[in-house]
Amino acid sequence: MKNLSKLAIVLITIVAVNACGPNKNSPEYVAKTFIKHLNKREFDEAKKLGTENTAMFLEQLKQDTTKIAKDVKIEDMKCVVTGETAVCNCKVDNEDDSISLVKVDDKWLVDMKKEQSMSNLVDSLMGNMVEGSDTLK
Image (spheres, rainbow, N blue to C red):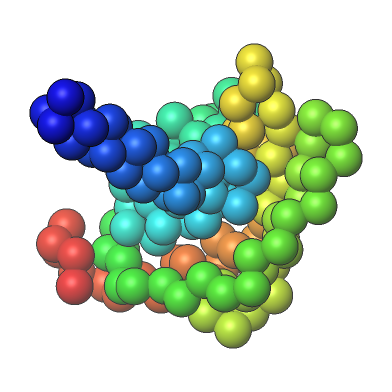
């Protein structure tokens, strides 16, 4: 009976810890993770968090840049969800920016459209990069 009680406590602890962790399918989590991957030039990882439009944009960006990344500071991430879309506003290295997301198959994805300018985000991230080898600083 004692072992059963210990097992129950362990299971409850595991459930509680997992319940308190970040919601990996929230717009805020997806947007922050996307920015971090983009900043580190982890384009393949960033693609997993985006739509087809985003993947095409990232392929172009991957080929166009020979710079390496430094750390980026993301603050004040606030997302407004309207049905199947979300707009996340934040500061990236003290510059205001926003990221659009769409919900596809119950999963939030960054949606970078050709006509949509995310130039502040890209300029900010590229501005945080320095000329050099492929080694992250």
